[in-house]
Length: 114
Image 1 (cartoon, rainbow, N blue to C red):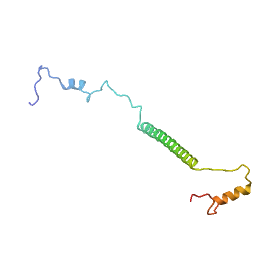
Image 2: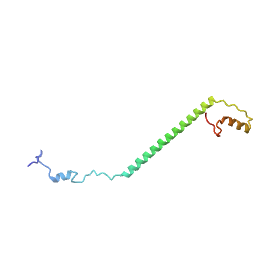
Image 3: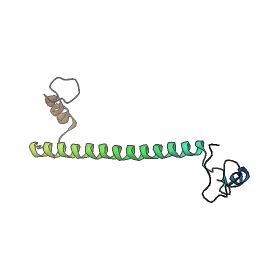
């Protein structure tokens, strides 16, 4: 006989083991059915990623717009520092046309930086 003897000499029977062993009987600790399904978790994950990307896009877009505004202001300030413009208030349309033709060096109708 290879079974070990019990210390108390009152060895549990197979029926005693079936009562206490959860593999043979029902356990009082039954987990409820899950409320969170895989689809719900995937939906929440995708929605969270979408919201995060939207927030990052808005922050990036505002940063680009602010940067463009700052650059435009800096360019306009530097142009204003170096440019001196003297005009008289009684210019006629023909005088303005002559002034424009003098500025338009390649005569394509656009003012270019040469």
